[in-house]
Image (cartoon, rainbow, N blue to C red; front, side, top):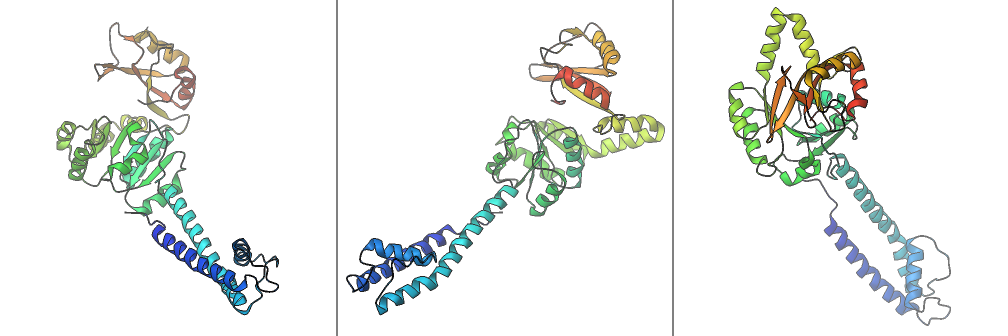
Length: 353
């Protein structure tokens, strides 16, 4: 999994040999040319200047050897200039290619914050990332398959999706995805056993992050929760519920499926979750009052709110009584695309936690 890098040792050895050989030839050139009749190479500076003129093929003609052996050394300088140029150009090209490759593979890191990190790439991950990007979230994808990098780049720009080529267990390398500043980490590996082992290992390095997994076996839900997973989702459970709903209440099922996804069109509906900031107009407002005002002024339906007490989140679904909305609460709202645009000015932040 190591990226091929320039062979700096070979470059150093080649440079050392170059210095020794040309140093010896310069000394020999100065010895055969110094104090000869008509010679213009009488000092070390003259010899160095002649070497530079020859290797760069400038050839000013102000410093020329006049002896037979001096001219033979000049031939060596002239012919070897092709090899020197080839070596230098090759090393520069290799270095630039390495920089470009490192950037493409994400080895320079990202400055994404409050983003989603997806560990592992497959068709299901591609479906998830489509909804996240559609909702305006930045995503960092970590994959150990080089071909996945090019596939992801075809669909998403680097400003929206950062890709990192890395072994999943190279936890130091995961720092390049700015994982410590991620909102949540989606562990998208192949099977439930692999996911559980990985969750146990990654939490040793990144304890305070939120993790989400999808399970093939819904019976393992409590096991993953005890391992420290924040959200566990059973694919089969969701599919079976949606299928049953389509059978006996298809219109409800169709609407539910639409609500679970990001609304791309203005006439499509979506459920969103917004944080109530202290300056929000609905802070310290009774729930029922906010319900009617949101519907009347924004055509948005308030479905519930989430309160956090001692670090524990509690979802109140359409609560009754004298519940007040407070700063720090989250409002669960159902709206179409137009309602989303109307609320953008009111909440002054993106939806989501």
